[in-house]
Figure (tube, helix red, strand yellow):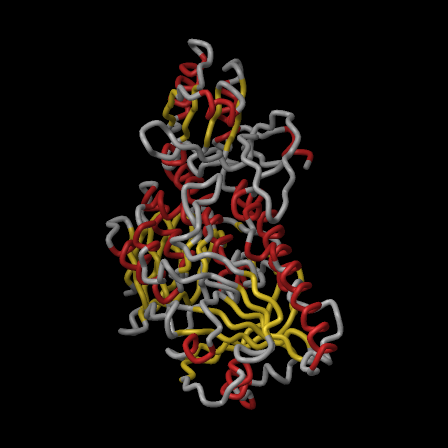
Length: 546
């Protein structure tokens, strides 16, 4: 007889998004089972940069310092170089300081952090494994599933023993990557650009690269030849590991005839620098977003819901945003205080962000295309110098949004959300490089330092928080009464700071567990209705007509 296991939530795929999905559910008091078909070892790390908003999430979950001190050298400068080869013509250099030298950006308590996936995944795996609420099982494969009125019945195979078990769950979340079986079996199509270009990533070991090329610390080299921009070299561990990405034609995508060593030598510009090829991974650059994020009792997140160019580093970081949006909604639904529309709002909020971030990532990749003819890039003398200077200047100016994407990282907002009450104020500009702090409903509640040294972001997490900046005497109590009646977890935080009050603009601000503003205003006359909207029990008229 097949063994049967019951769990509130079954998560499929224990990559970074699946692991943090389990961690966020555990953080919110929800038990879950997390299965992964591999043993969890990372042979070819794809993730490099953890953006500031994700570092805020890691702070909330309790392992931000482990990520910050994971191993990438604090004194390694993160400069960008545009060149024909590391020992060839240097077209331009965009110098950026090391993590240690970089100031904390305005509007967040954290800097971005380089933490390759070979370091990040073990941190997440260890943390998830320490949570009693998480049943983490590697080498377990989802074979099939059925969505019923009461939840999901899944067939799971233990690849080590061959044992097959039936997992009964209230909900299932597919975090199983770009080729998601969960999404495919649901029949959800991906919409967008299926082929921006072909790429092959070469992970190689070269401890002497910086010393022998004398190029200085680099985060990335954009490599340009007579045919145009043909690839980029990216630092992995700040020491000996590098990834060369070669892109172009279908012919280059032919892995059987791909000369990885030849391409590395071209990037280095010399044949006498020793290196070792570790892995070679072909992939296709796309800009795709799932048509739906939920079907019945099954939802998708991360690359299962959206794929985008890695230029800008927003792929997995968009997935972490999915996690934080979905986690509290799943918890509210399972605990009974979430309304019928709460889980439906996940797609309404997160899908537009994926479309936005994917378009930004494609934009960044296109800025790597040189806007002038590069066929004479190796021409000697003054004519060649003039052309190389022109190419380098154009690339440096065009690619700035890739490295300085504060608006993308912090400025995303849930416009027309069915669970945020608009206040009629105009939207701030949604620009790639500019972040304008605002407590307008739908936006991330802005960071500010409290008098005790904490960031105000530390107040947000498992509960709704009503910020009271000196509202009328009974206003906060009306919200407390409405929340108590609905069973919604709510805390009131009185903030006696004029500068923070000015930043948040209204005397009462209701912040959701994910740190986004649900409502703000002057009085509590509609407190019960506001609470019902925020928990997905009442529908806004705008949502019905959108």
